[in-house]
Image (cartoon, rainbow, N blue to C red; front, side, top):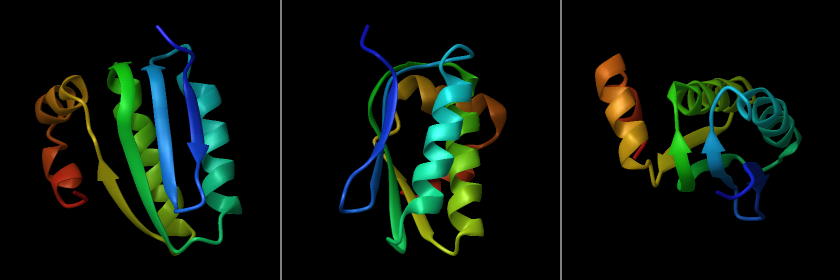
Length: 102
């Protein structure tokens, strides 16, 4: 498994990669929050296509990043949500939130 990371590219895509769990979540949370706050890009895409495995921590990260973007006045969307994250969202009753942000 690869190292977990979050990075923001010049087009406004916030890329999450690797394994999202209780070990990686706190660091990714701080890094992602700083990237969102420091960006002057008005529209952000939360891209999860490089996520290898996720627990519910991955969904918590997405929700936190969505709140951060909203607080910064940015429009946000989610793409590339892996099947395990979709399954957790469905069980948690969060499918509607991510469907609103295709």
